Length: 222
Image 1 (cartoon, rainbow, N blue to C red):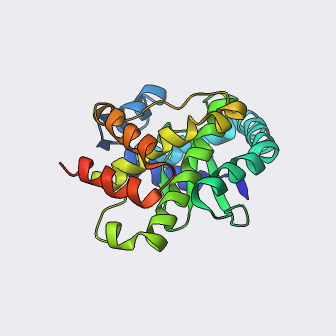
Image 2 (image 1 turned 60 degrees about the vertical axis):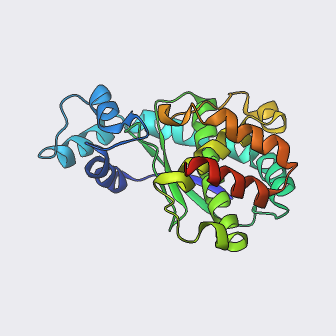
């Protein structure tokens, strides 16, 4: 089950983690400055406290909206993933939090994530499923394909890149887009060139996850 909350303390940590962070061609610090031009390391705690207080009603409304949308659709989401992985993940708990920053990080150890509150209703829901899919993909690979991935970094490099490409492929499946109604694009510019080759591997693997992961990692390690 997926549940979203508000977590002001986490946003304070996220600011310090992302105010100057770049990866895969994305400038997360730039995204923060775009929406919050006056925030900085010295005033970030005071700024975030004030922002949450002044926007309490809007944040609360968006929280209720997102949780309701997820509750209405997560059964379908988990059923599609069960067909892919041959395992039912719906009995696990996945936690998320709305964020005032457009960084949308995920924390693999805790299997928690953030969703930027200003995104549209369909897009916020899709981000939630995107992050949960990361947890499921990495968990499956750790448990079933450790010989292929045990020495690889989940936050950088080919394994991370594969997880991002895999998410785009899966979230654009017809069975999911029938209810998501919001096509998934490649968020990281640096991965766009290699995406078609990995997508072709997926199509030719006929649902064989081991084959897909092994061949895709070979491409991404080049």
